[in-house]
Amino acid sequence: MKSQNQENFVNQLSIDCVIFGYSQNRLKVLVPKMVFKGDFWSLPSGFVKQEEGIDQAAQRILEERTGIGDIFLEQYRVFGDVPRTNREALEKLIAMNPDIFEQLQDGNFLEWLTQRFIAIGYYALVDINKVTPKLTEIDQSIDWYEITDLPQMVMDHEQHIHKALEALRLNLDSKLLGFNLLPEEFTMKDLQLLYEAVYDRPFRRNNFQKKMLDLDVLERMGKKLTGAANKAPYLYRFLTKK
Amino acid sequence: MKSQNQENFVNQLSIDCVIFGYSQNRLKVLVPKMVFKGDFWSLPSGFVKQEEGIDQAAQRILEERTGIGDIFLEQYRVFGDVPRTNREALEKLIAMNPDIFEQLQDGNFLEWLTQRFIAIGYYALVDINKVTPKLTEIDQSIDWYEITDLPQMVMDHEQHIHKALEALRLNLDSKLLGFNLLPEEFTMKDLQLLYEAVYDRPFRRNNFQKKMLDLDVLERMGKKLTGAANKAPYLYRFLTKK
DNA sequence: ACAAAAGTGTTCCTCGTACACCCATGA
DNA sequence: TCATGGGTGTACGAGGAACACTTTTGT
Image 1 (tube, rainbow over the protein chains, first blue to last red):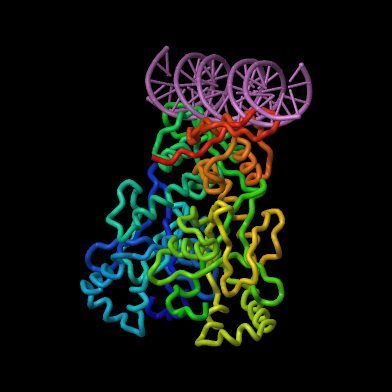
Image 2: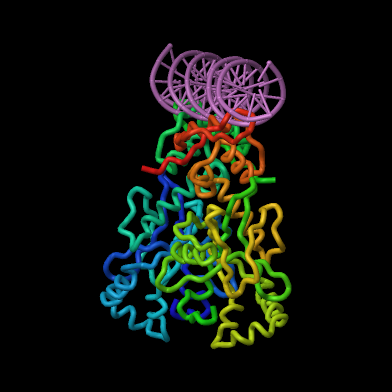
């Protein structure tokens, strides 16, 4: 971080990422906790290099945190109000963590950080099993949190997450995004549970199945014998686009 | 423009506006032609001051061009790829217009302009009759163009307009935006013609009326005697939100 | 044989579409 | 009284929601 020269970045512009994953029937968001004392959780974010496009920048930032590339992502909103408390909060944070910031006193890094930022919000969908969350230098830890049980986020980052969720809901079946969150093969029940987690409401089993099959994007594979005393469900996978 | 100190603006960030208006049964866009020699049409745009939010900035830029304030507007997309030909094109433009740019040689204005920009796209809806388009210092003229008959736009600005139109179509009736484009009172036929202009397709007269009335957002006023030899249509207006 | 859970079919209702008919207006 | 165009009613079909029934699995 400090080794990079911030002159290479577009000034006052950041990319904030809401990384959605799905496991144990719950929709989750990957959120790092910052190293600074005082319990600050902040969305994974980064800056845009002069020689890269904003989508590329988002891909790079995501890869830094998740270890995987070629992730599905989409802009959903720009946050560009003038912050009222941002600078204050940051200065408080710096006061609380003098040891850390002493090391960073190269050039005008502090000045860089305390600027007003315009944040382009992206949301991303990842297969939670393929991700090995990575710490950056400003992270103390990084974990998956249920969307209904988020930690105390800095500034308006909790709002960002909810705006991102709105965008996800609008696009989940119109853009067939489900397969980004599920393993290669899954049962209809798995898919239904995903939908129920995303929309936070129940669906009728039979109608859900009908609706999904009518989309003509699922390929039925073999059966899955679970060992339970009931009919074995079929496995499905998403048809790859032609 | 040159009198403003560009240090007050957020660097490398611009606001591009697609201003929609409606008259003579046609959806139109307000586009200025730049003073520079060589026929350059470019979307109205501007920069974000340090002390203003991005929505405020868009409002200000729109007011500068239209003379009216409190305009409906909405972000629809950020354009942030690294331009391949932007700098080239600008330098060509400068070469073609040495007289104009000589006057602008204060400080690093040229350097400012030839930077890479990230553009936040906004679309706006205005009552075309209330607008008196205004020239800025870099405009030669500013006119309404039919969306189907745009002049040669610089860079990818024509694509911007079509992306904005997509966003408008998605929101026209879900967000009841029609009233921004129509006068206070209008007939059902007026409203239908607006929809047909926006969506570029015909609607059935009776079904359209039913759909609109079912939205419960229209108030029926008196009749409008047109002098024509037929039944007089009702006038409607949008109910103000409670 | 039985319970449990998946698969499938059937009815009902809503909503958009298409067609038909009635009504006011001015010539 | 006629043509013109606005207002309204009705029938049809697609698609979603709610219900019921059948099939498969392991005990």
